[in-house]
Length: 304
Ligand SMILES: Cc1cc2nc3c(=O)[nH]c(=O)nc-3n(C[C@H](O)[C@H](O)[C@H](O)COP(=O)(O)OP(=O)(O)OC[C@H]3O[C@@H](n4cnc5c(N)ncnc54)[C@H](O)[C@@H]3O)c2cc1C
Ligand code: FES
Image 1 (cartoon, rainbow, N blue to C red):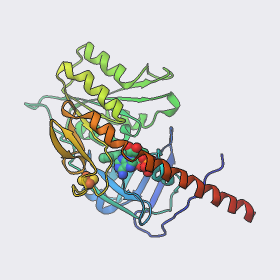
Image 2 (cartoon, rainbow, N blue to C red):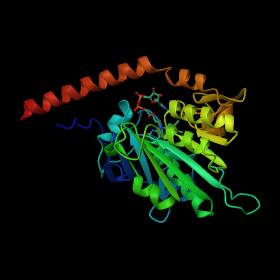
Image 3 (tube, rainbow, N blue to C red):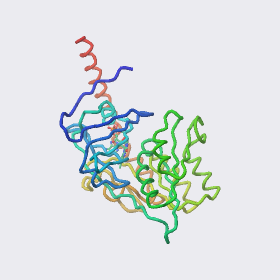
Image 4 (cartoon, rainbow, N blue to C red):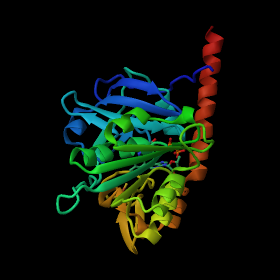
């Protein structure tokens, strides 16, 4: 398939993309030069980046970082204009800016008193990349880690090897049954709960529908459950109010009070409604972008 042309490139040397890999299901892995972020990054935090000056600010979770090399690793799923534009960038291109690390790091502690804690992480889509550093942090302090990861088919699964390297147990679900359990990540979690497998904390990161399903499953069992919320964000500093969510009847800003919250207290209906707030504008923006791409392709064909 012919690649769409990249519209905007930044020629600067900061925030340079050092590596880019195309993974399954329109997910892209980037290793980016961002030494100040890499120095301070902690599990559960995110960055807000712009591809070009005046571009949209998009929040992306820190999947990994290397303070010595001054790099951060991000996994980005191409879902709309900005993430599709980012998917067209390649190693050597630069982002306009990367702000972070933002958000409160995950609370990682050993079971009390000094007992091993069983930490169950559930990831779907880019959520697999997002649970990665948190699972690793739990493993490093000696907790038992179980990772449940899912995809539509075997070919669309990402980061299986990386998750195996840091988990005591990895359980896999595919919608079509082509790998692991047939069904969703919640199919696996449901059977673990029904079989009374020990678990102290469950963390779910991914699409809201998945996080809500996990929350509904664990509620009757009283298992402590955390979700990393992904509302629309702009400034990432608690000033603009774009990311407000309601948790236990309290108004919270996901960028500074989260992104992790007690799942059983989250108002998911409000989160879904607020996520869709700009859908008409997002659609227009995507259509305009496609038109620009088409025009540029025509110009290139004419030049040949
Ligand atoms: C804390 C946090 C961490 C995230 N981590 C990742 C990650 O690691 N990898 C990844 O692929 N995605 C991640 N996301 C989601 C990512 O930010 C959105 O997919 C992206 O902003 C979509 O922009 P777009 O222009 O491509 O799509 P659009 O067409 O503009 O939007 C598509 C959908 O993405 C959401 N969205 C749009 N703009 C924003 C915004 N400024 N902030 C948040 N959501 C938005 C909306 O629900 C919208 O309906 C994260 C979101 C949050 C809040
Ligand atoms: S993104 Fe503006 S307050 Fe959170």
